[in-house]
Length: 505
Image 1 (cartoon, rainbow, N blue to C red):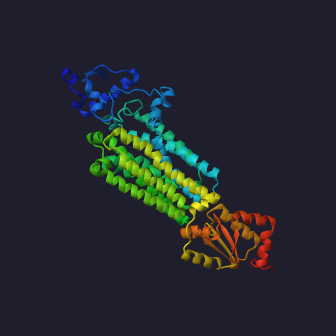
Image 2: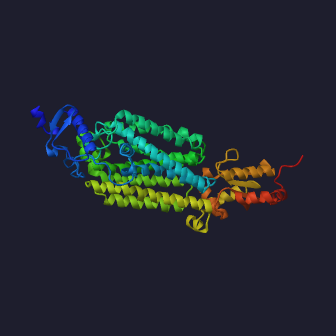
Image 3: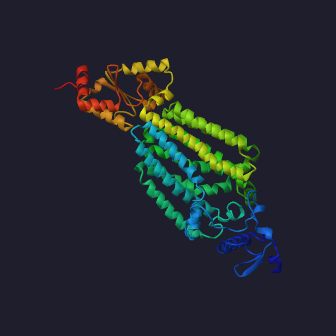
């Protein structure tokens, strides 16, 4: 017993190290003061050298803190003491992860909104609010699942040794029950969306549950994390009523946006992984930072290039204008270049600073660009017309001339007459049907199938929105004008004069 009492902690068998660290953490939690060199684990007393539990020897960012200290400021510090471990399990004191989970949801919502102008600002804002609530809940559930998987690894990493499960403040059984409550809450949020969102959202749970295992079998767990955290880049489309399985441009935009967000996740988590690189080696944890430690910045640069290229591809598929490409793609390129150039990968504090603030720099810039693009599509203001203006190629103009002359009544719309993809297009089809337009004298063109046509028709008519109606090659207007003319009788008179109505029996 004397030999054990004088033995450094690192020399003890692994099962004793785990048990002693948990006892040590639990005692320190209750006393909130440094322990003496002797403490009790079960019925036996152990004497430890002063430096055997110091985090400063295990991690370059660690201070001289040898025991857990409850938060003394911030939101968590104001909670009842029994709630604090659960708040820490949710990472309420570190919201950056929630932002990273929320941004892909916000991107897809804004990109989908710009593709279907029937989604008003309040609907878009409400959808974004639901996604924020879902991100907060599901990020907490993901952290709990991760900590349950890592409860025997976390005690050996300085940054994670005082997590609630690792230090024994929450038992695994209670953590499982708490996670179940979070998943039910997440399901409650998911049920607030259209039904099709349920079928798109549930598969992501498989990724949430399996990510913690990836770090045990591959040097690229960040790729699995990317697949998980980026799932929201798909969800915005069905949330606004866009059926990805029957809307090819939207499907292409969603796929490109999702892939772009996966690249972004791998990029920022590679920087994050550098904070634990020494402890990961000791604990046998694998990461992309270890695999590419000698050429990290090259890999980061390649990931940034892939991210921006795919983001631009999403904009092309969605028919976005220069506002998006300058605002979103341009700002992302600048912020990522600055981060990759300046981040000091050997400095833990610097890695954390760029991980935390890079989220806002890059994510915020992309969001602003998407928001401005949505406003440009929605309002058609003079400023947006100037920003989105571009030279209409002779080939596109010729193709539009041919389309306009293909029938007496021509409608450029989103979707088809049988399956309109936005409310304004649906309303226009209904108005023409009520007026009794002869189907033999009518043709519709789906602008979602051709981004060049979608942008070109706006410049051709100098009208900023879709749908657009042409009668005998003359531009009549959009949905709002059709509605007004329908209500005051002008449309019925015009259609009758042009002889495009179904002949009376």
